[in-house]
Image 1 (tube, rainbow, N blue to C red):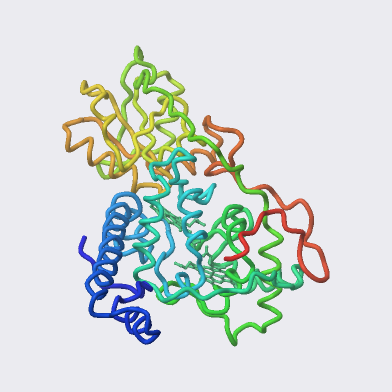
Image 2 (cartoon, rainbow, N blue to C red; image 1 turned 45 degrees about the vertical axis):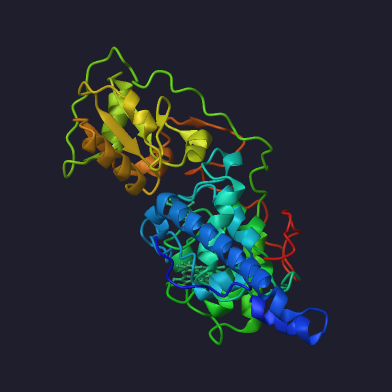
Length: 400
Ligand code: HEC
Ligand code: HEC
């Protein structure tokens, strides 16, 4: 990908440094000029390389949902990552933590190696550099908590926010604000900033002048009262078990599937085939970190960004179905690849894994991590009346 424009990186220009130094009378500017210039050029070169690496990683792992230019909404209502107000209010740590940890219970997987995802810290930083390049300079937001009345905020939320953001347990079309990892990373000021300024270029309106300052404080206090502890940090990457047997019920008969649009098989039909011990391969096309947290028993992880395992699948007409959460995009990528490679009986699991889970069809995974499809824990207490919110359950980063 070619660089669209140079951002507002604060790489000091060699010339400017020299003027300052020469004015101080300590350096002969003529002698030092080439060296300063070389340093500046090599810093710019390193920054360009990082940008290119970030752009390539973004195209491979993220564009599927967040769109190639990161403006969002290519799949699953994934938000923009480059709106002016997002980049102005989000710290690098906020963005990288979102990438590493994901948003458990949504289509946003954890992409960090420690979660079983594909990205190391350098790659995450490169993606952040790629996003930052578009943005305005970040504003420093106050680390102070917002104080407001969460009970009054609940009414503000129902009237003004719920139609897009859904309820505490059910995501609407917009970002799920009850998500534990979002609330663990976002400071009160970050949340407030989004409400006041909106997210230009996205459906998120600005509430400045629409809601009173106190109403905004109250709704932020209410969001904070939704926080629950995020999944514990990991210190070592989880191990992906060896591939093993790829066919479920290898001795069973082939199922009969009728595909919608020559592509989609209803989850009900796949469930019936499993119950009847039919022969089938099920691919989990999400990031491997999501497979580790929760998957259909017997399914194998072949994420939409890495196809090496496809070589090990039987090419004898065995039905191969792929699923994801989105519910068609990642699985569609894998099914397209299978068809390109000459596999004849392939299908996308129509409603996706979240609906599978909702219907309480069998899944297995890591019980210590809230998984996609599991409702967030129900509110334990009604929000505390009176001034500020519940105590901080979560560790704040100081900055948003
Ligand atoms: C399968 C779709 C999908 C893919 C692929 C995906 N995301 Fe997301 N992402 C989402 C969704 C959906 C959300 C919002 C979560 C929610 O529902 O609340 C999100 C949220 C985020 C957020 C938090 C934004 C905020 O406003 O707090 C960041 C940062 C992010 N994604 C970065 C990435 C990056 C970088 C990649 C690639 C490494 C990526 N995502 C891949 C779907 C996706
Ligand atoms: C018309 C739909 C709509 C309404 C109404 C709305 N939002 Fe949003 N909101 C969105 C969308 C869409 C986004 C994600 C925007 C993006 O792509 O960055 C968002 C983003 C946010 C974010 C940033 C979350 C993040 O992860 O970065 C916060 C906080 C937020 N909204 C709070 C609120 C509150 C509080 C209200 C009510 C006072 C509200 N919103 C009303 C659609 C809406």
